Length: 529
Image: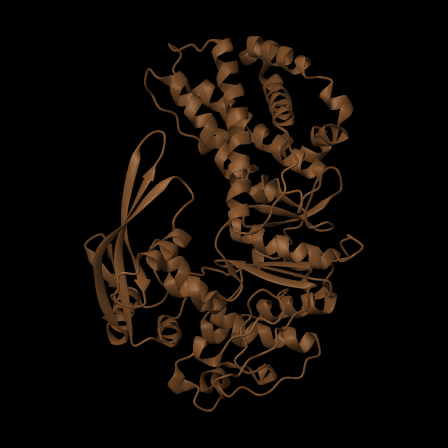
């Protein structure tokens, strides 16, 4: 984790969660729009690694990790993190890497603060530290990777290929592995597509890793985010010093991209955006071919392209077109607008499953209080700041994202109510109360997410008002529950009365009209609930 924080370039184009995607997106879009504030034509490629964790070459990964762990020794300082919430107080004990055995609490606190969450909390330095040398770390890594034993029935099996998917550091290990692949296999082809001339590599690992047509790769370059300029990587950050003796210590590279390109990877899901069709085609051709030395191939059923590529006609294309004619590419739970690069949540994943199979219902006499908590829980995944940042999405899409989040929540609400035992009847007025409470909670949660991103210097802008959020929520519940009028007749009447109290708002804001048009949420017509 320390290497991840201090040397993020070693992780290539990796992002970990929507907050990091948001940060990269908010940096990329202004450069792409330029002075005209208009998005040019972009070419997008989405690819997914087939069985990413199960196909990792253990020896190759161990070799990569040995090159990353460079220091002769590391000092680990123990701390306790106390998190205070309205419901409970939780404590976690962990360790942080520090420079030495010294008691510089300010440095330790700053490092821990960068790792922990933003909830009100207390960080306690336990005053205990441990020194771990490089040899011990290498031994522990080898044991972790090469000693995974599975028990099936009464037989034991030693895992020879791949790593355990549920491990606490498995996602990080997979990211290091694929970052090395990007650097040695994908980057050279993107450079060639831009017509760059580069020096032959002085790294012995690179020479044996490159294909015949990869030899034009810039020395010791590392693909990070293709839109960043002047991103440099010193030789000794990527490889061990004794493996780069033929290179000068200040050997650096020029980044392979202009502001019109971006490569992101969420664990094993690739996303490449470029204003050059040639470069996007080059990226597709390279990843489609696979990477034999890394035992890595793409899942041919999960490619997504927003442009015509003749040789890929036999492959399924995940391009999604709504009833309004707008084209999207799904990527890691997001829907990316192929024209404007605006971000929406991907609800197409619910098309092949009944909503009742996505919820759990507690069979007890506290159905009302359980439903109140569940409605708030349902809102959490769709409250990320990336959906409501006006620097990324227009006012219409911001409101559409809120409306669609409420549509899904209303579907889950119906399924939950239908699953409550028949001897328990909830008063419609009480149901209206907890529904309205979820609207207020949703708005508070969105504001909190926006604040978190501001703390991390992303500077999002929220132009959605609380009254608009409530109006969108009421409209969404009415649209869903009127399909089940026999069950919710009294509740629908109460919802319509509430909506009429703020009905003039829709006349004043065309963005609210846009958000509630059925054509923009056509996917919900086909979701079963």
